[in-house]
Image 1 (cartoon, one colour):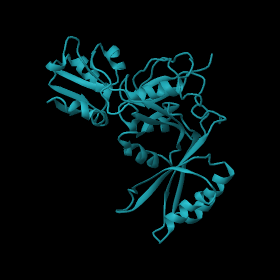
Image 2: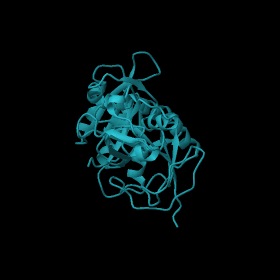
Image 3: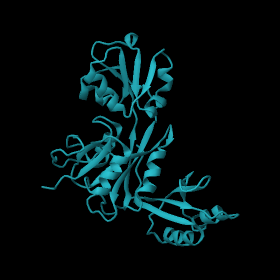
Image 4: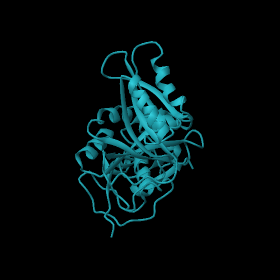
Length: 313
């Protein structure tokens, strides 16, 4: 029997982060608290999981993104899954900051998975829309359901997690309250769906990064035949044309950059770093040559990982 690996996600059982774990690693295995749960036998992987390892994971819930990074760093788990980008709300900036912070600890991106975001309004059984006075959820989910929420005069309150909001209502038996969360949490916590598909837009998705320790066999499956990408962060010199020359290292070799975003460097005021997604593996000759040239021009270059590109459907 193949041993199940331990995978960390942020939130409560039923969170979208847990859905990402299921989509990448496979559905078997019950979610448990951060101190561990029984391992589950392997199962077939879901869509987007062709880069995953064979065994289905022992899913472990942690309260924060930082706690997920720390668990991977400390070896408490074999891998972690963290949200990195929303197709509607944009980058999850905390994740990018943590990727930079934990680079020297050997945390790398070893995969990615894209999860469709379907939101529902859930409440205790027997409630109705007209009885609801308060709505709880994570700030990102509230923003993604803003058009629906503005149709009623509800008090909107933020919590640390979508599934956590649903669990709070269920455990407190809080009437006149509802949560914006995945419809899957209704069955998990004994709630009812008052309104389904309340998210803005039909193609709303969140992209998650799969984290592993550098050189870890458990979290780093062997490269497959499909397209790959590389995520890196760089700092340019404060001289005219430096950014142009850095990007030109890739353009001159026909290597596409699918993402470029600046973030505060956090080491000095008004200085910035650039996060880049490259549509190639770092070991491919053209990309390797571009990275070599980049290192001669940039002040700092960190390759966060090369991994299979996910499909969007």
